[in-house]
Image (cartoon, rainbow, N blue to C red; front, side, top):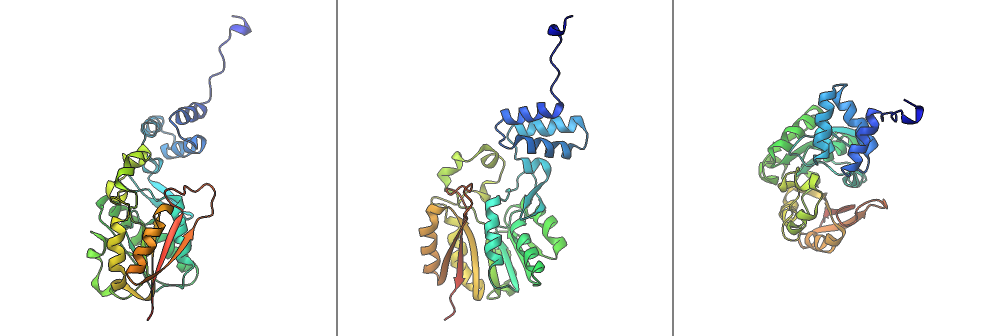
Length: 278
């Protein structure tokens, strides 16, 4: 066989993996390949299983068992909403407020938002109490895994219905990463979200503000004087959201993300609604 007839060198295994992921539409294929290889721990069968599931559309974070958020890895898994990096804006906005004594995280999902705020406050020398709640059992399991080691209490159930009544009128900081995608827009979301994350964590009703209306209506009864409610919305929902909080005796402040890569249609905007002190 002449040198011209010799077969071309086979691509390295990681190059083949990157090519498969890129062909499946993974934008950060190289990074994902490295993470999946790490997760497989030198087990070729396990790696093939993870790659096949990723190519089929499962969220990377569900396969890894964790999501990186606000500089820390938080436990997640199948059936659990994956917190978006843009929601780190809510953490930053919370940490810019006066240090609270009591924090409540509604629609907490895996607990990453409340946990990140708690750790940020502790790093600044504060010692707040954190309570969190979510209606989705799978999310609650991961929230307990993430938050209970930090001394937080996690409650399973619908919004404030399961929060200890003793917190009424004592919550200084109320976080709520509620679903705000309009029902009709769910079908336009990426498959890894609409097919693998719970609908209850995505669907905000006809205009996307259905769950938030319930939270805003109840918030004045739970907030301490001068306490604040923080939630995320899309930029086109800001007028409706600010009108909503004003109608319930709260003073709105809109915080936006200046990141040019942020998706302005679905996030990067946080409303800080502070209970007016008369």
